[in-house]
Figure 1: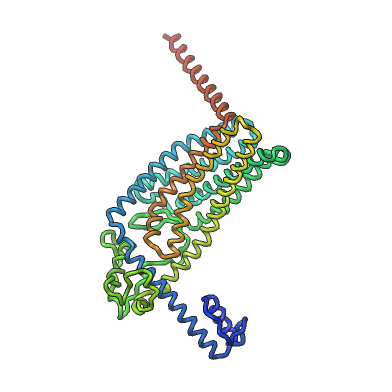
Figure 2: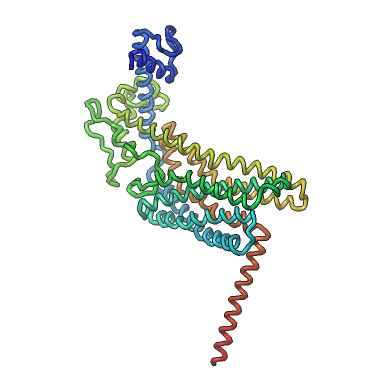
Amino acid sequence: MTPGDACAGRYSERQELGLLLHPTATADGMMLSAGACERIDHQVVTVRHKMDSERACFFLWDVRDIFESVTKREFADTTEGVRISSLVISVITCILGLVGNSVVIWVTGFKMKNGKAMTWFLNLAIADLVFLLCLPMKAISLFIGQWYFEDFFCKIYQFLSNLNMYVSIFILTALSVDRCLSVALPLWHLKFVSKHFSRWVCLLIWILTIAMSIPGLCFGHLENIDNSTQCVFAFYRSDPFRFSNVLLNSSGCLDEVDIIDRTQGEETVRAFSRAIKQQFPAENLGELPHHRQDCQNETFWKYIDECVNKDEIKKWDDMLRFSEGLVIPLLIFGFVIPLVTITVTNIVTVIQGQRALHKTSSKLYKLIIVMVATYFFAWTPLAVVETVFIIAARKLHLELMHTMNSVLPLVSSISSFHSCLNPILYVLLSGPVRKNMNESFNRVWISLSSRSTSTTQCSSSKL
C-alpha cells in the first residue's frame, strides 16, 4: 500500500466520522499533501477518542446507577412474580393446547374431507403441537427456578420455539390472504387457488421457517445468570463481553477492583455496579458527572482514559450490531409484514363480505375482529420487549435493558398461549368442523355405552 492509498483510507474514515472536508482535498482524497494527511490523522484520532470516552462514560454512568431506582427486595419480588405468572400460563397453555390441537389434528386429518381450509388448520395444529410437546421443559425449569435439562435440549427448545412462532404467523397470514381472495375475487380464487396450491404454500412455509429458526440451534445455549443456569438465545459467544474486563488496575485507579458478589460468590451486574460506585464516587466531579448528559464534557475523560478498557466496551457495540442485524430483519419479516398483511386482508374481507352477504356480515366481522385482536394480544408484547431491549442496548440504558430482560419470560409465555387459542379461533368456531366433532364424539359415546351395556348383561347372565 502506497502512502497515498493510506492517506486516502484515512480521508474516507474522516468522512465517515462526519468531519468537515479540508479545502485542499479532492473528492477521492488522493491529492492530499503530507500536512493535510497529518491534520486528518489528528482529527480522526481526536474524534475517535471523543466517541470512545463518551461511550465509556455513558456505560459506566448507567451501570453505576442501574439499581438505584429499585431496591434489591423489590426487584426480587418482581422477578418472582414474573416467574410464577409465566409458570401458570405455561401450564395452562400446555394442557389446553395439547388437548385442543390433538383433537384438531384428529378431526381435520382423519375425520373430514381433505379440503383446502383443512390443510391450513392441520398444518397450524401440527406446528402448535410440536412446540407444545417441548413446553413442559420450560414449565419444569420455571418451577425449579433454572434450566433443568442439557444444553442440547436448550437448543431444541429455542429452535422449536422460533419454528412455531414463524409457522403460526405465516400460516395465519396465508389463511387471511386466502379468505380475502375467496371473498374479493371468488371466480379467480376458485379457478387458480386449489387445495394442492395450499399444500405447496404450506410446504414452502415450513422450509422458510426452518431456515429462519436455525439461529436457535446456533445461538441457544446454557448460561449462568445470577447464580442459576438459564437457557438463553445469545448472539455473541466468541470472546464475549465481560464486566470484569472493563476496569483497569493502573496507578491512577484503585489497586484492586472487587466485582465478586459475596452473597452469590460470582460476578454479577449488581456487584459490578457496586465496584463502579467505589471506583467513581458521585461526589467527585473529576471522575464521573452527576448528570448523564455531562458525559459529553471532556472534563471527565481523563480518569476514564486511565481506568477503563475501551476495547472491552467496543465488544458491547460489536455484539449489539450483530444482534440488530439478526433480530431486526426477523421482527420485520416475522411480525410487522404479517401483521400489516393480516390487518389489510381482513379489512378487505369485511368490506367485501358486507356487500355480498348482508345476513352473515355481522358474524364475519366479529370473527375477524377476534382474529386480529388475538394476534395483537399474543405477539405484540414480545415484539415490543425485543424492540425496546435493542433500543436500550444501543443507548446504553442498562436499567431499561434489565427491566425488559426480567419481563421477557412473561411475554414469551403470553405468545405461547396463542398455541392453545388457535384451535378455538380458527377451527372450533367453524360450523362444519364443530358439527363433525359432535358427530364423532357422539359415535364414541354410543360405542362406549354399548360396551358398558354388554358388559353388564354378561355379568348378570353369569349370576
